[in-house]
Image (tube, rainbow, N blue to C red; front, side):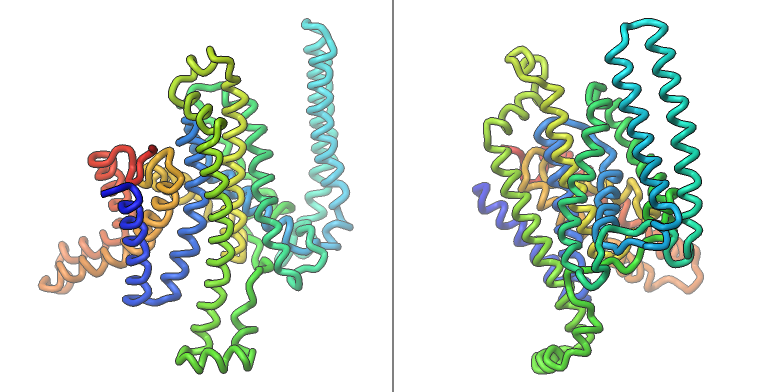
Length: 441
């Protein structure tokens, strides 16, 4: 079997799984799996860029995805005028003062000769700047969060049109990539010199810090109170249901208008996400097959030899770390748009780090097509394994008496089928196809 035929078989199998889900359960669920599969494939592309191209072990994916979600709020939500009047200017001033303190310390470090004087001057700048920053920042935050905390209590976003202009949400997607890329640059400048295991610990810790900030800084995105009702690039279902033309067309096809409206909205999202995935996939393929891509793989395989040939390994690592994180940020903004809300409490390492790594490993590390395949396959399993497992357990225990301890235990265990299946799939792939289903060429 040729590589092309094998790939067609793999993706044909994924299509059959999704179509089967639509036929056996509901098309709403099938299209939802497609949408989140597209987003997961984009995340897997970003991780594959870092690991498959350069061998960077980033387990802080969750943080960059969350920053993308934050960008969706900051770009698409309307500002809160009362909050800005109460303390918005003080919050912005405090942030500028904090940045100026760091810049001042760096300038003092570069301008003064090494010695006690430089240390004292830097300490004075940092300590004084910190207390000034906190004095301005704390009062501003308190004023902002006191303004209608039940429904607002934050500064809002930058969209003056509010929910009337939903297409601005698409602009938030590249902005999410830029926000994640900026954070990745800061992280990379300090952490990329570390050994791979230390890099993993550092990125994981920084991701947790990002999530902690999103949960606790209410002025930024309402914290755990969540931001709901984000503008969307697709029409609302109720609008379609109130449209006589849409209802007539749905009835002509023999579909209930409520079901048809949901399917149509999800299909619009699927079309938008497919366009983004295709663009990123084409760019990743061109990068992979370019001299830059060959250089990155040479660095991955032997850093010492590449450095001996005159390659700046640290700079190239920083470059690809930023690019991969930007892709994860784009996916995070897309996911928040699809959900219609930002919920910091839902960002868990299991979902947004471990699962994405399983997608890359199962699909094929170093192969962009494999990352896409892994994204769809693993996401389908993640969604469908639990109900399938429950059905299997019900069949197995159908002959057992009600209340029998083994029956109750097996039925309760169905909830853990997701984790069990992920582990079994990972072990099987590593045993029989250690380079993934579509290995790197």
